[in-house]
Image (cartoon, rainbow, N blue to C red; front, side, top):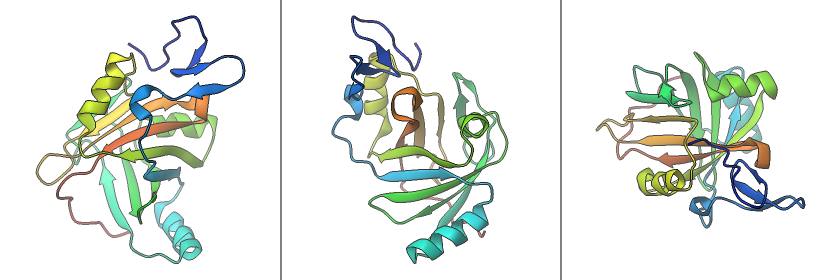
Length: 186
């Protein structure tokens, strides 16, 4: 399975049906889900938080490092992942996420090579990631990058799907853990 199905009478881009007139519909598993996060890649997390805090008048940031040490189950392009990043989360409806890529390979590093810093993905928070991921898998979509187990109790998960060709960015499914680790300092 791949993240770019191309079967069928109509052309598809990253699973979005097109007819020569552009994108017609999202994969069925994404339809009706509310966008709850907008994420940007930044070269320096502290500087990004300062810039966005000033712009939004917000200061309620949660900061986390995600790596093989803090996220026990990481995958990248179907193989075990070794990537790491530092991120900051602020607000809700939608939540703003800033990501500073650290170690790779990862979709963040690939993005930087092609697009540079800026908007990277839209996120969808779900009570449980599994049912939507299963529907996507049944439709031929595999996550290009994923992680799970970063909550205090070993819950919490994320999975990115490649819709870059069709939408210009990734889509992320997010299952927030019941209890997060304490926020780090910048």
